[in-house]
Image (cartoon, rainbow, N blue to C red; front, side, top):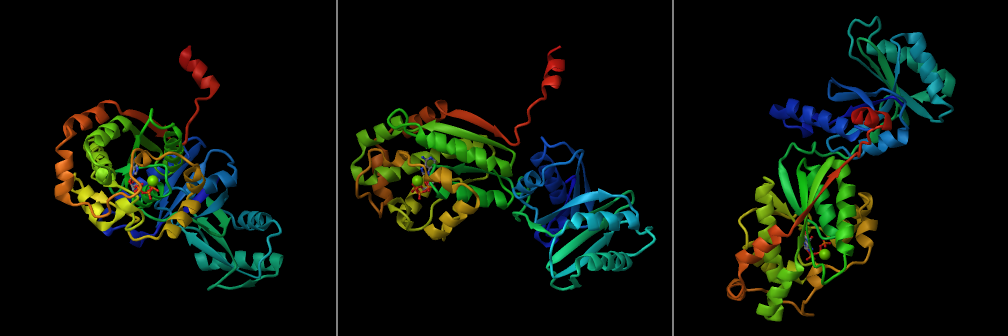
Length: 400
Ligand code: ATP
Ligand code: MG
């Protein structure tokens, strides 16, 4: 295939911002195929037409288009001359033995100077397809659709629609910082906010050297995977074991998890300010574990000023896991690991933390010093998708 016809939902894009959203969508689509040699992307009415310089494996195009938020659906199409004979010949050849009981031709005529109007084009091509396939025409609920675009310089045709991921183009809704753990929930939470057009960076707290590196490796894989939706991500890895050790030394068991979480949020808030992120994202959902009772969530959130978004707050574990499967994070999250919050925690953590008790316990710690320690010892990983390799010839010429 050498082209893709991409459709977006105009109503999903707010009126005044439509041009801005469309530009962002175009930019993101081009970024998603940076390594495939795109020729150009043209704006048609409520559609975009992406063309490549060469033939591309359809499976690769489908995978890429399925990850660009803002695409409602798309069709793989092929370029043809603006000539009815040629168009008819290419469409019949392209059917390639496809079997269907009913069909329709859907022509958009972007060039009003073309001698036939769209109804006439539909009729002529429809007659040919009907003769070849024996299928009947059904304009309302066809099993098979032939899309035709007649443009000023060329024409395009393709068959059927494939679903896009919907949502809004990443970048249209501002930046966020996701607290990501390696579990099932936080990657799904980050995905849902990207789908709403947010650009997401990530922070992970790990307990190395007290625990092994599995959670860091999982988070690395998760962020790498999610980067295919936003083409660029940054991950902060914050060593948390020492901070936990100091909390353990100063604080009685029941409130430890609440204090861990409050420290995580404080450090995340600092990073968010640095990254110009407007809010944090967590994968919390009410009642899922002891730290996620409404009482505890309230006391935890009071450690920071920055808003906390919890896209999964009202979701059932099964719904979250189902979505993790759909977005392909399930397998990575399934790998057993040692979560840092399991380190030094009691079997029965407090489920109704009281704000005054938490503040009294925290007074035994040098909170600012712990934040400083976390920030200073954080490491940063950058992710890019697709990874464009410089061809060896180019590399040689650059070195020469
Ligand atoms: P998840 O499946 O995302 O790990 P969970 O059900 O295990 O969530 P918790 O362990 O209570 O729930 O964590 C709640 C949220 O806190 C997580 O979704 C994540 O946003 C954040 N979080 C927990 N542990 C970490 C960590 N080590 N690093 C960064 N964020 C974390
Ligand atoms: Mg977890």
